[in-house]
Amino acid sequence: MADGRDGRKADVDPKLLELLACPLTKGPLTWDPERSELVSRVAKLAYPVRDGIPVMLPSEARTISAEDMLTPQPRLGGPS
Image (tube, rainbow, N blue to C red):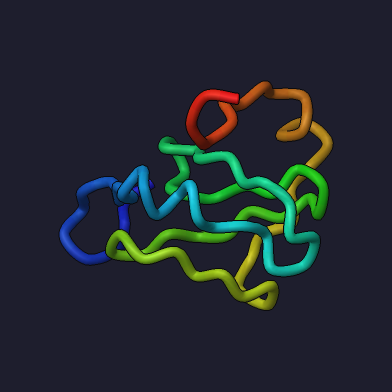
């Protein structure tokens, strides 16, 4: 999925990802580079990243399907 402007995939700064949380659950997010989305598995929402900027509005988020929930995704953040 392209970021919509020049056809390239969006990329998000890893330090920014460590600071972000789901606005509804305040829980962790995972990065889906194929879809350029930040995923909240608890809220079952995927927030888009456009031009490298996370759009953290629930009204802009995509509802995650049951199939998407079965696919394991790496968790963001540093060592535990």
